[in-house]
Image (tube, rainbow over the protein chains, first blue to last red):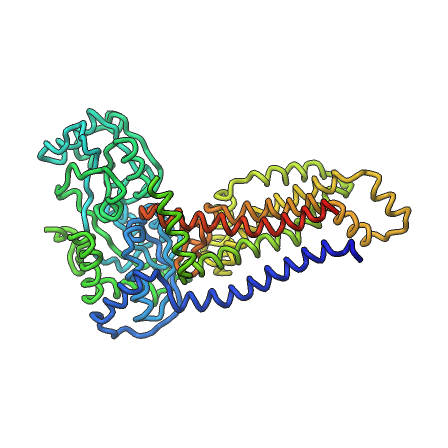
Amino acid sequence: MHRLRIPGAIFALALLTMGLLVACGDDDDDEATASPSSVATTAAAAATTAAVSPTPAKIGGEMILATTTSTQDSGLLDVLVPLFKEQTGVDIKVIAVGTGAALEMGAKGDADGVLVHSPSSEKPYVDRGELVGGKIVMHNDFVLVGPPSDPARVKETKTLKDALTAIAATGPFISRGDNSGTHTKELAIWKAAGIELTAVAGREESGQGMGATLNIADQKKAYTLTDRATYLSLKKNLQLEIVSSGDVSLLNIYSVYVVNPEKFPKVKKEQAQAWVDFLVSPATQQVIAGFKKADYGESLFFPDAGKTLDQVGR
Amino acid sequence: MDALWEGLKEAVRLIVSGDAQLREIALRTIFVSGTATLLAMGSGVPAGYALARGRFPGRTVLLGFVNTGMGVPPVVAGLIVWLMLVRSGPFGDLELIYTKQAMIIAQYLISLPLVLGFTAAAVQALPPELPDLLRVLGAGPLRRLWLLSREAQLGILAAIMAGFGSVISEVGASMAVGGNISGDTRVLTTAIVLSTSRGENANAMALGIILLAMAFAVNLVLTVVQQRRRRR
């Protein structure tokens, strides 16, 4: 009998683990409904709820939102998603990938809604009819950041073209290289400035998200292009400073789409449409405008509901 | 260096204050990785035994596959499971993508080759005459399986620890098939990735310390069992 004790111990351990799992399974569901976000953001959401008129119907269900990393990394979705859940009862599964990957998920019907920031990349998907009901939600802007010593003397330049020319001559420059909205924008501004990528001194591709890329640029004393929201969120850990900003081509415009339910019958049409309507509603637009404004002294995102691409930021 | 120290303080603070969100993420981590490991144990130990003791054509090739499987990067396993479960994939109708079940499937596939391979190695390390000896002594097939597994227990426990260690620490597959959804599929490793990309280094460090502490606790229990067995 003595020899049987050890397998018994394993059995007991297995039972213990199972018990823990069951307990935690239950607990897990409670938690999910009770506190869907961090304490801080719940408080923020609660504070803003008062300002929101609760008219939308409680349709419930869930949906998959494919989006860019900046909406998640900045914390904006931590505020908006619980608010949406409160108003409509819809659970959103936020999948934060680059804009390129988010659009591809939409094009295959693997998501219900898409929130992205690269109008030129979005156009083919809209033209092919894979994404429908597009609405402009908000904008901020891209900025060029670099080491405080500014070896390329970018801060002295007046135009974006001059800034890029200066960076190209000195480098190094870290590119996202991941088909994200920021990467697409970077390629576009080099092209507009008439600079070949191969002519940019020390241009390297990180292949990572904005946060990681900023860290790399910071450590390597390199220049990079970033959206202002992510930069401001991470600024306290970075030496990097804004060296060029304000050009109209640096506008960063976020749009939301429903994945075409006629092409992909599995799409949660009702929920995705409710999300679009929610984002452009006056109350939500107000929440977006106020998001983290107190923390940074400036807005991270500027609401743009109802505007056309040409009207944004002017 | 600040982040390391701040991380340690933050970890202590989070644990002491019993932060609800942290508790939820930690329990979910144990649930997902624990279930995956239990499943891998349930199927991998018998299969590893069969692979070690069996005599069938293609056995060596199969063992080669298993040993290769031990080195498959989690992110590749995650990609394969993602492609299978995503709506446009062959099993899209099951609506399993971005759920804990999807994470368990991916982690199961990651830990299975480890449990299988280490179990096979442990059983093969037994004296080759042992099975025949047991048969001569009159033990039936089931009784022989039982006794041999007990003899190989040191190695089998190591196999389970390796399987558990591989999944509780992996992030690629969990991120791909779970989606790191707040309150639903966020586990410690994916939360660490998010905290890092948000520049919340102290918080990321704290989560890392908690992850290590949890892995240590589980392995300590298994190790105590294993070593007690050795002394006996």
